[in-house]
Length: 260
Image 1: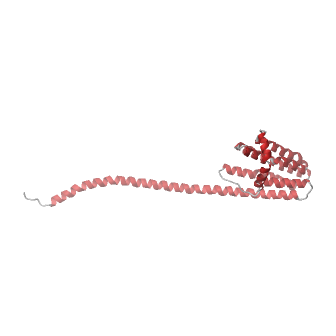
Image 2: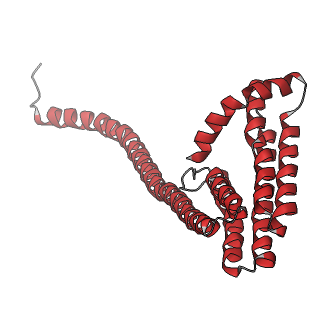
Image 3: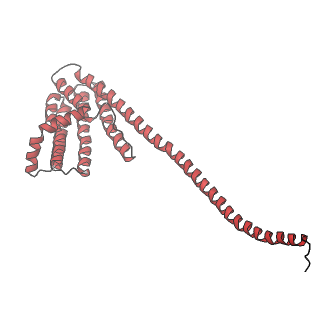
């Protein structure tokens, strides 16, 4: 939900900047790469040292490139499958850097094994959730469901990390638990959705094969019947031809001869 709202809001806000970059001849792919490098640098330079507030500020400055490059692609009317592939691939890299930095900082600096384990789990499911959707589309089905999309997970964790850096208690713990549970539910939702669609398709195939077999059998039966009817018709005609003279002969023999 946050993904759709954020894209609509920030898409309008970044439109003037996107127009300027397009006039300067800058490619949307360049913005995608710069944004990913900035996110990874902020996450891996600040989070492992438990400087969560400044790390969040740096990441936030670059994370909006994901919206900016999409706006530029729409303005140039050149959205491409390559751009979508690059954007999705680098999103996974940036997400991994954020949660890896959180895990390292919580474990090595704050020595909080529980929160470090939660951050590591969020890192894992953060890769599985989009994979389920991509794999579903490769199987010609859809998995556009889930209560925790990428934007939801990032916003919750980054806001909580920023407040955690300001020494606000429990906020990061609550956020990581929420993201972990919501991501798990999303995985279950997408798995069930894909399973239902695939079973529906595979369930129709046996019925279609049975129907096709019945039609073929019926056609074969009709063909044999038509063929047998075609063979019987000439025989009946021949029999009728032979039966006429025999009846005439029988009538002639039974009639008394006439006198001349």
